[in-house]
Length: 392
Ligand SMILES: Cc1ncc(COP(=O)(O)O)c(C=O)c1O
Image (cartoon, rainbow, N blue to C red; front, side):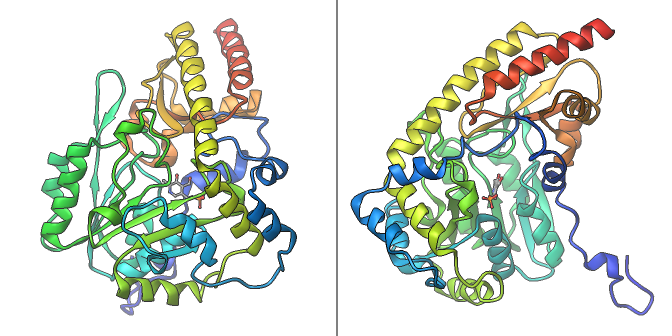
């Protein structure tokens, strides 16, 4: 609301609360059975160090706790480049993934710019644009009969105009697990080219395609205004080191990012950069470990939903470490999730944290597929459902 002196009221300067992160802040670390985590099984410190090659072992042993290169340690950026086809070290900047979303949006966008972002989605991917004062249009999915979600490019083409400054996509998608086809991806890139919009592509769950043939090209390789976000949190199981990166070719945008970084964390933590280097050099092993966990958990959760087909339904995601399942009992989804975590310590994430009305009406909830303790969590959930049946 505008205050009568023409200045914005104090409240309108505040960014809206990040509902998912607030829900996690309340429950994540105190719930013994986290069943909605988006990261893959976090590595222990000793597991990580066991993966180190000789060079990384030496780096680790001789590491000084000094400031590091604000762009990201050079050996780390060299390793990151190997994930792309056309990227060199000066096209990469390293920081925490969430910090990079904020930096990128502040570097790309001005008040009044038009932005298209997927919805539902990870809130910072549209909320920061709204906070800057952009006009944000939502690209929403069609819900399939089996509960799966499809983002139709036809719908996107109605939203992107010559005034669009940025198209924000996230494939594999949080929370639905949707992945665009390669043909759709080409059309998305084409739409951005036609409107000269940035393509900001959150690729945090890339490499976790259940069929590697379906992996999409990175935005930075596909388009000169493509910006790829990735990091160690999901596919590599190292969320605690807080290392991510942006890869982009636009030198002016890179200069703005460097400037903004000087006002946030300046540079990353030296130990985290070495751990990221170790993780990236062991990428094949780590990603396969996580895909194996996901595949086993898809089977566990599918069997669970079959045993409780009056309570829950689930369409396995094409890619990524999460799925958007449904509660079928008619109970509002947030009430169910709160009851479940408070009575049984099992944490599921209700669609209400995504603010997306059709998913709330569908009683959708996020389930995490990347953690090893899923069978144990499902046993406790099963006990809770049994008690529920006895009560009714
Ligand atoms: C789609 C997406 N982008 C970005 C992030 C932020 O990653 P991080 O928590 O490592 O900063 C997340 C985290 O859940 C996410 O799901």
